[in-house]
Image 1 (cartoon, helix red, strand yellow):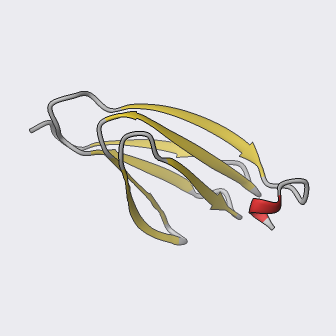
Image 2: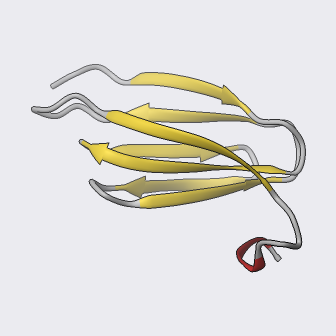
Image 3: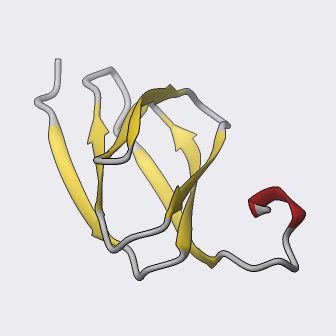
Length: 82
């Protein structure tokens, strides 16, 4: 079992982070949102109205956790963020 490795990712105000799981499992946490578990292949979008720090916690497993993090501006052009 691998140790937990928090990966802080500071977001700018009014932005979101899209976390694309490419292997393993991870949880994400934000001060204004509850913890969630994402699995292989999941796309998780975290809305972040303030400059919080997102902690991506890698859970232990047989394979390393690889993440692709996309910092996305929250805009009215994206109905998902409305």
